[in-house]
Length: 64
Figure 1: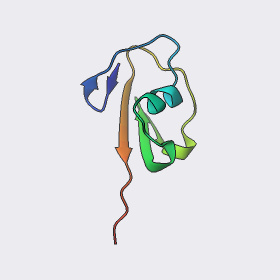
Figure 2 (figure 1 turned 135 degrees about the vertical axis):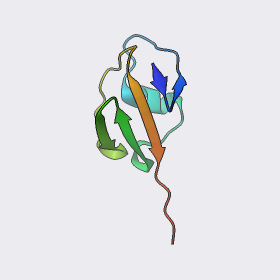
Figure 3 (figure 1 turned 90 degrees about the vertical axis):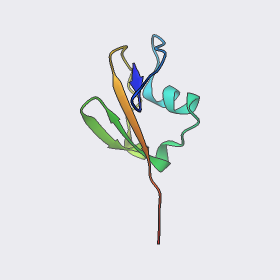
Figure 4 (figure 1 turned 180 degrees about the horizontal axis):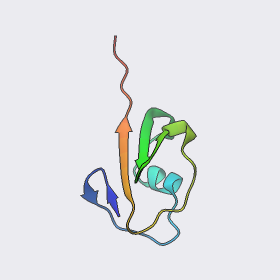
């Protein structure tokens, strides 16, 4: 598994929401891509991840 361009240890039955929790990432503050599927963080499904998955987590930063 790869997360944000870096190898990440794969755990069987790991879900996307569990991964975000492990990384201390609030889902509503990010955009997420899993392979070729893109989600606003708060709308990302809690799908089970696979060892070959590529996950990109982009933090949303507001400015003014």
